[in-house]
Image 1 (cartoon, rainbow, N blue to C red):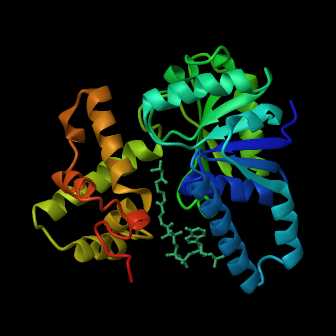
Image 2: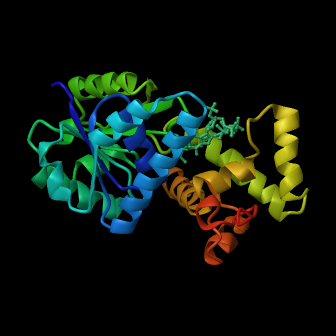
Length: 284
Ligand code: 3HC
């Protein structure tokens, strides 16, 4: 099936990024968020990114005009009826995702592929909420979406080879490098990256060094592009906490026990860049 129209559900950081790169690749895009302000803000963020690209001479005003003509923003799932592929990028909660996939199954045309950008949850479990598990697949993007090249493609137990191939092809068209991974909590990257971030937060909690010095050490001593605590702020402390808790439950291994620092910051409402404060202060 040729994919022409892409629907994206959830206009947070990841959904907005996916919408942006899909329009840049020439797809018609419908970006939906149940909260109108979130969808509107995502649209503004895209404009900001494109304005920067024009300033740097990387894109032209005509390019931006073309992208804008391809994007529609809404709050209602019904608009996905015409889409060939829907990529869900909503909150990481299995019950909410299952309920949303059951709704998408009702609304979308029978041949449409339903993809989830889940960072760790079971594709098989999400797919089982639909009557088309063979057309449900994981499509895991990385933050910041316009910059990070990888997309992990994860088949559930019922996903067909045709669905995987169509997803891999879409990744290539939107200029990403797909890697197919077996279904397992956290797939490849988050399986390795999240325990690393957690260990950094535990070291911070134990007072091994300040947040600044932990991050500087990993940049200077291990060549990381950014420190683990700044990365945690970028991803969202709430998201990292949820993933640690999920690993602990799924693997039954206490090595995934989350740092208390995550819990304290989440309880205080300091979720990282998105709230202006996390391990570091972004309010200035
Ligand atoms: N949106 C769009 N573009 C962005 C951006 C953003 N949020 N942040 C940076 N960029 C662009 C800049 O505009 C710049 O573009 P240019 O080359 O065209 O000028 C380019 O990226 C480089 O940015 P900077 O010069 O400002 O900064 P750096 O060189 O330090 O790069 C970084 C910033 C790309 C974020 C880099 O530090 C990095 O790669 N960090 C690691 C990120 C990472 O590990 N991401 C994965 C997180 S895990 C995940 O997402 C999975 C989830 O499930 C939890």
